[in-house]
Length: 461
Image (cartoon, rainbow, N blue to C red; front, side, top):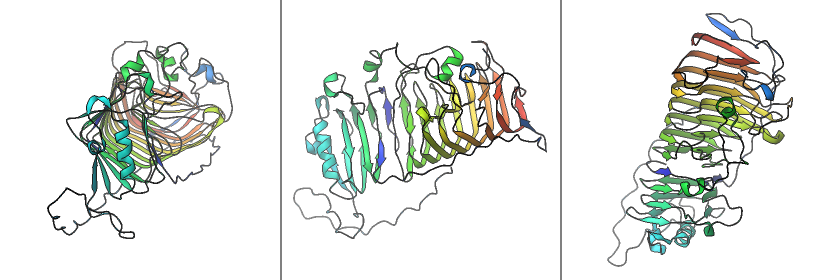
């Protein structure tokens, strides 16, 4: 998926990629609470900070692998040109032949779309999708130099059990009037129950988000827990971009552009997603640049610019006493500028499951408020109930993280009953930018593992 831009997206715009036959994996939470011994070779152990018992009301502490490149298939034998007459697409293959030698291109203009920016082209897109579902190796063409006004659509299987390509070179815009949205409808463009989907091109998807942000209520919305550590900034309902994506999903040359104060506009939201590669992209939004939720495994993110936004987050996990499983996550070669958080793991009290095998490396921070965060007391309300069960965190590695912070360099708040284990910090060099806010020292609670020098600022953990 490369080269197109999402901008001005609203909390009512959701792009879901859902595989029809999903495989639900279980994870076994490990109740590990052993203390790490003093390590050799210049490594110091992380240890539990002395003090009174840590709970949700004291959470501030201060009052994957890259997917293998698949060789390109050999070019098919040339097909003789058709006889003179009306232009026709190559016929689909016979059953048992596999994919068609050439794709069948279906332009939305041929299904009645006007592309003038004012005519409702929703039905034309639905008709093009229905036709594409009947033909293998089909391409839905959204041509350049057109603006398509499209209302809420669900591009859904289960009858589309083959690869479909969206060639997006034009512009798709969301309606600004409420008449297009049914009661409780939160999805704009939804892709669900599909086997294969590619979206590519140089086009734009514009959610006209500002219209909705201005009318979003401020009074009853939850707080981002890290915002409470800083300046009590209000947040909104989550914006979801990408959910239930599986089978080698590749996202690259991708741009998201939303203002830093736009309510809960996540850049990319992953859930129940496997074998995902995100690279060479620019993400500017009002919430997490990338949000990784339960059911994600083998996610590799690299060469991404993040900011403004809330950084790259795993979680929140375990809300309402649910089980959450996340594993094999790699985030590397990232530039973060003017974000609330850098790299963050957040879980709710009362949850279960595990987060393990996480690597954060080669990350450049610039004016980031909280560069490194683990918070097992996450709460988006004014107050949350103390609970003993927790999502287990282990094998979390931080390496070569440098730059400047404006609030606190490191915040580790792990569970009293299920501490974080196998946490490793190597070559962490974070310096204060300038005193825009009150500066805090590094904070560590119930976190065990190894600390390798250099560590700037000096370890308060």
